Amino acid sequence: MIRGNIVVSLGDPSGIGAEVFLKSLTQLQLNKYLHKFFVVCDPQILEKVFSRLGTKVPYINNENPENVLVGKLNVTTPVLVNDYDIGVSNKTNSEYVVKNLDIASKIAEENKFCMITGPINKSIASSFKKTFRGHTEYLQYVTKSSEVLMVLSNPKMRIGLVTTHIPISDVPEKLTQELILNKARIFLKGLHNFFGITNPHICVLALNPHAGENGTIGNEEKKIIEPAIKLLQSEGLKVSGPISADTAFLKQDYDGFLSMFHDQALPVIKTIDFKKTVNITFGLPYPRISVDHGTAEDIAPKFIADPSSMTECIKIAGNVHKF
Image (tube, rainbow, N blue to C red; front, top):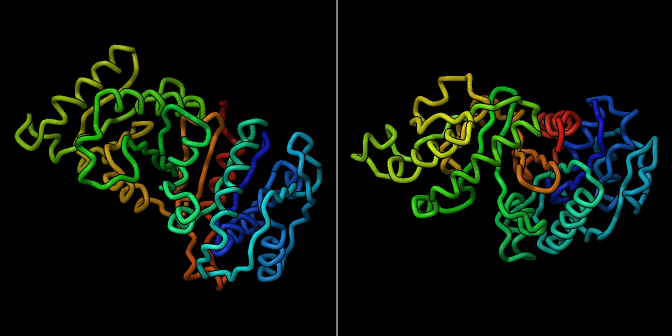
């Protein structure tokens, strides 16, 4: 299943990131592929989880991603974790979380690895990096990528977001024809490169109810979204819309849906299959996939977390078409 190498940032040590990753490795029976994983973390985090799960995955310390050692999980430790309790947020580890993310990103970019990220607590991360709003925006910043696209995916649906973590009141003023054009092109290219879809077809959602009803419920469709779609179609790209979000998802023969804002589409995809939904970033210099759930600190001490989202991340990472 696994082809190329994968670098993993486990996220906040107080959460379920290490637990769901190690559960996925054992459930997927990846023993012969362990050397394909380069994990950025303090080994004591692994040991703490191993002791609670009653299982162990063989690993070895390796600070050189250019020389992945065969037979065991490769672990690099650029930053040591401070003392912590599983299930308890700890701002003293904010630097650990962010710097591990930095190192994992650098490894992915320099060595052409696919990157998997575990869940983080945004409030903890932002106590070290004040402008931290989420993985997608932060990785765009550290890689100096001009434009990226947040994509939610599960076995039944793929959704790209034109705007991400901004107040709903800011969405209309953020929407521009250029933004929609850029996001749609990244989406189509990513569907082809990442998933191997030939000539993908996407549906662009309207912003307003009933797609604005010819301007009676808003003008964004007529002034911004429709002209962008026509330009994309003139380039020979398969783009339909704008279609009202209340009916768009009833038609399942699209390869993806382009949503105008975060909560327009995420409730749909998560309701359809929450456990196997993952977060993918298109537009970075490497493939990046993340679980689409939080640190779950309420259940973290119980070690009952469902690893399905992380398992799906590993499956997708092992089958990335090309990048």
